[in-house]
Image (tube, rainbow, N blue to C red; front, top):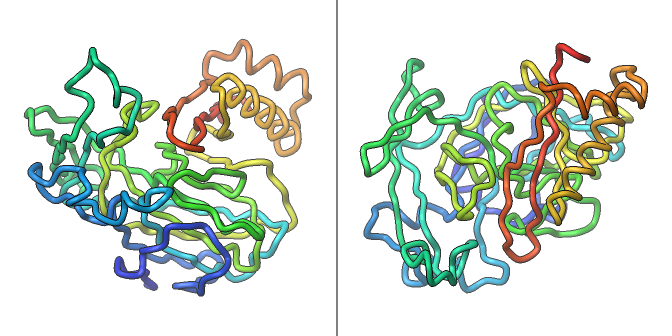
Amino acid sequence: MKRVKREKAVQYAFTNSVKPVLKVSEGEEFTVETWDAIGNRIKTKEDLPVPKVLGELLDATPMKTNFLAGPIFVEGAEKGDVLAVDVLDVVPAEHGVNFILPGFGPLADSLKYRECSGPYTHIIKHLPGPSGTTSDGEALLETGEKWRLKPFIGTIGVAPEWETLGSLISQGPWGGNLDCRDVCKGSRIYLPVFNKGALLFLGDVHGCQADTEFCGVADECAAELRLACTVIKKKRIPFVRIEKEESIVQLSCYRPLEEAVKRACLWMIDWLVEDYGKSQRSAYIHLSINPKVRVNVYQMLMADRLEFTVGVEFPKEHL
C-alpha cells in the first residue's frame, strides 16, 4: 500500500505550487502518517505552550500550526469535478495533548477565570480498544477520567485554483481547518476540485473533541490514516459535504453563527432537491419539523480570520 511518511507531512498551506508527495488512482487505498497540530513539540506536561517550546511556530504570522500531508494527486480528477474521500480508518498515536496557549482562546484575558489563561499542558493517554488499536480506544486523562476516543481529521481540503491559503486560519468551499468531528472513520467527504489531480491535503487529527472546541485546542495527536478516493465527474457543490452511514451533512463556515447555519440550511435544501428529488417546499419543511434534522456546531473560536464551522445533518431514512 502506498504511504506518505510523517517526515513529508510538513506543509502549512493549501496550494498548487508544490510537487505532489503521492499519486494514487481512483479507489486505491493509501496510508498517510500525520503530525499533531504543533509538530510533536509537546511530549510531557512539563513542556508548556510557550515560545521556548513552540519556537518558530509562534513567531510566524499566522502561526505555523496544523501540519499537513500533501498534496496527494488523484488520477482522473479535474477542475469542475468533485473528489470523494473515503475515510477508512483513523488511528491516533498513543497519546495526545491539550493545552492552554497564553493570549489565545475566549478566556485568555479573563480576570474571573484566571486558571484558564495558561500556559498549561495536559497529556491524554490513548488506550487501545477492541480492535487492538486506538481507532476505537479510550482517552485517559490525568484526572483518571476516561471516555471513548472519537478520532477525526481536523484539517482537510484540496488546493484552491490560484490562492495559497494557510492551514490554520483558512476555510472555504475547498475545505480547510474545519475541525469537524464527522470527518471520521466510515465517512465520505465531498470536496469540489479546482486543479488537475485535485491535490488533496490533510492533517491535524484530533483524538476527541467537544462541540465548539471552546478553548481552541482539542486532543491534538499524531495519527495514521487509511483513505481511498473516487472522482465524480462534472459536478459542482457549493461547500464541503459529508455522507455518513445514516445521514448526510452539509457544512458551512461563516460568521456570525446564525449566518453560517442559514447558509448550511439553504445548501442542504439545494442538495435534497438536486440529488434526491425532493421539492423545495418539502425540503424546507423538513428543516423545520423533522426532529432528526440536527444543526451541529463543530468549531466556534474567535481567532484571526477563522470562521465558525457548522453542519446541517439530514437522516437518510427520509431521503
